[in-house]
Length: 93
Image 1 (cartoon, rainbow, N blue to C red):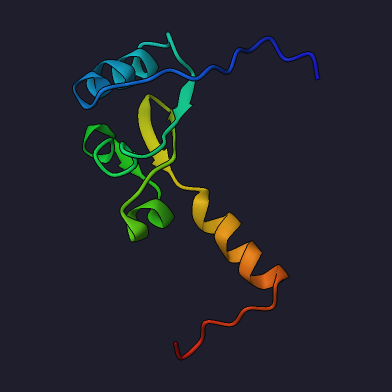
Image 2: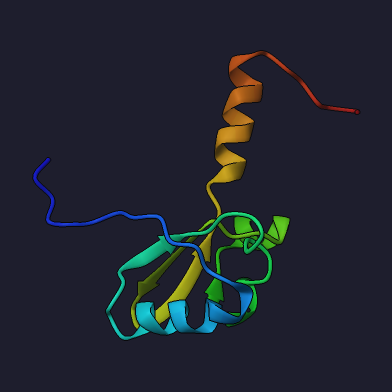
């Protein structure tokens, strides 16, 4: 794909979350993926939260768009697709 980008894993303590968000805000980082234990506590540092992420109170993707730091969650999509592909119906359960 020849994309001039780097994707790396970094360990972040809770008290370092504001600095990571600031790095996205000032363009040092384009965005980040978020894992446990920060999926919930990172939300308070964001300007906007996608309705899907808000509905499950969890973000796993953070990016900058139109000068706003936005949180999204793609976990729900993978989960629902796995249910669908395995013909698991949770209606009335």
